[in-house]
Length: 152
Ligand SMILES: [Zn+2]
Image 1: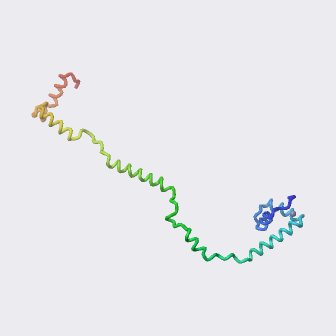
Image 2: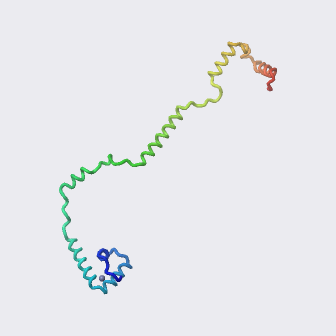
Image 3: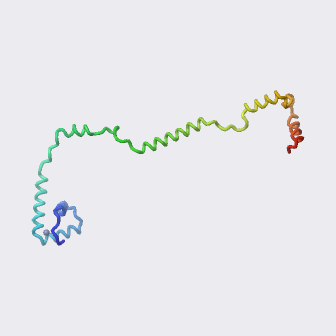
């Protein structure tokens, strides 16, 4: 260390905030520089004098001023995670409501359609009423279909 150290480096030396290499370089400089040893001594005396000063008084109106500018926790900005969490919850709720209200796919033919078809067959006499409950109905229907060229 050829140049005289900055006062901040001397202060850090007194605060024991230097690493080993910095401390060794400064000690070498101080060993050969009376001016810096004197500066270090005065700095140390200043620090000791300042350490014995009473703390500055707290202004009487500090607490009321802080209370005026303080924001209650319920007025603080909301945490941003609530927005996506709320959107996700609403999406899940919408899916659940849609799933509950969605008409279920029924297997087979609804009874209403079968009843309507039965009524039409009866009304138009496409199938004789006595044949609707006849055990021969299936055989008669198969014969009719075969006659029309359908493969059974
Ligand atoms: Zn020096």
